[in-house]
Image 1: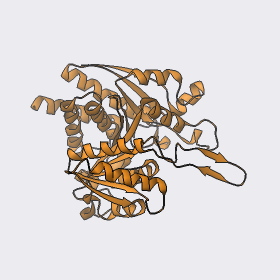
Image 2: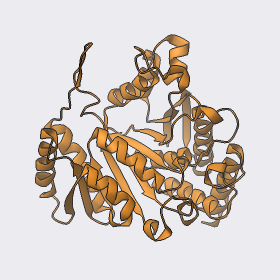
Image 3: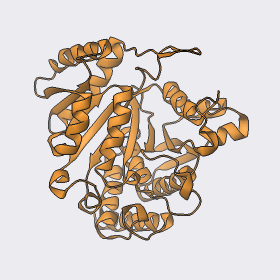
Image 4: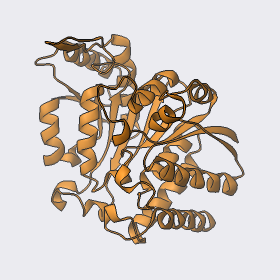
Length: 354
């Protein structure tokens, strides 16, 4: 197949991990006879420095025409002033809106080697295999904002349509897994959460083969650390999801291992590792590329409909986690390039064995 993939390296270690992701996609294309073209564009702090805009018009236009978008990371101390009128994170919010993505999907399946690095006891992390689905378009991040010398407000707003579509995504995904959805809200206090819960119950009735439970967000934060293996698909609103997914990432032992996909109604999705720009190690060849490489597997599966190729990449990463020398965040001494080379070798070996 032919596909155009826009690459947004961004800031910090973003260019290093994005390059690793592109290398894997090129190897997959060569192995299976696909034609992938790559269009590199600016976003975040790099875009602010170049043209004064965290999401230049050229980047937006390229992404809107692409089959998929691969992102490295945005942000860093250089642009960290929260009072600055233009910030790198604005580019990320804007590209999500431009692409119409509304569900941020973050799988969390622990490999025994990485689980050993988790701060939780092994008996707590055994069998953890869950997926977070975070709503991306509503909530407090996008509500009306005011600021004066004496007070400030951030409106939290949700529509029925926004909740319905992310709920259906969660239930459809649960049908392919263990058929359990946990909806997270704060319905004992917030009106938006009461709406969220009522819509969740109504949509859940359309899926009688999937069980639905509700958890308050503060309880969920505790339960993620005390019995994480009990959960299958966890769906929640924007800010709660932002916080809970980072908490959940701790279970894996390193942020560098985890991928994500931001999906909408159209095939084109936005794929990125969940880690930040890590400016302290930028340019040193120390960044863990596995989160980005696993994000390319999600790209292959969800946007390009290439499940065989996606499974190959995931199997190669598993092999490297099992037997390879890893980057220092997961207890190894390997460089970014070393880990990439190991994944490429594993892809070749597994493809030939098949």
